[in-house]
Amino acid sequence: MFPNLNAPAIGVHASLPETIALAQAHGFEGIDFSISEMAGLADRYGLDYVQDLFAAADIRPGAWDFPVNFRQDQATWQRGLEALPGLAGIAKKLGCDRTVTWIMPCSDELEFNQNFKFHVDRLRPAAAILADHGCRLGLEFVGPKTLRDSQRYPFISSLAGMLELGQAIDMGNIGLLLDSYHLYTSHGSIDEVRQLDNRDVVTVHLNDAPAGIPVDEQLDNVRTLPGETGIIEIVDFLQALLAIGYDGPVTAEPFSQRLQALSPADAVRETVLAMRRVWQAVGL
Image (cartoon, rainbow, N blue to C red; front, side, top):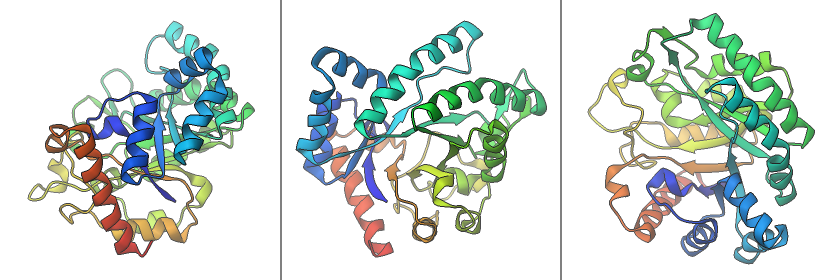
């Protein structure tokens, strides 16, 4: 596995070339990216130009944002499906076969079984297209009880539940976007991670929880840098990933207002320092 930068997750809004330069300057090995931006650059300058951006900086592509808006009306969903083959083809040519999205843990309109069927019906055609292009889709379960309780009907909010959804989609290329904060807030365990296989994990998000707040009162969009508070067992979490042979990107996603107030360079610098500390604690 390798330390990976997702610039928007730390409040940095930069172009693809700028993000690659920030990652290189501060010691990240990979980056997440917008597949739509990449497609625009490839269309304007050629795919070789995009490939050279990564190669010249010795930066790896981590994961790309899932471009199908499956939560909206059918026409919007279908437009996303129509564009997906071209986007997946570009990503695969770049050597990046990981795309990810999150699943809302509740609904005001659909009770659990209806919501489960909705997600299978909406995501299976996309997964089939991705499979045709050798790409995988990581689904993120969202753990905080404060969010789960914000709408009428509860939905999937655990590791086991998300694995069940992936199995129901049944395309062979569905795995997890595994987030340490969501594992913690869902009352999940490190043992659950140890029971996974590398193929079960598409990408990983790493963060810590604010101190002094009971687990069921934690908010989805208020977190800290990895290892900042010691609330989440980050070393055990990473060791479990090592034990299952996980070989993909590990990305800090702190949603920290303090970090967002910094300059882009300072925000990236603080993030990589936090990643290095937990990396060293694990012995990497």
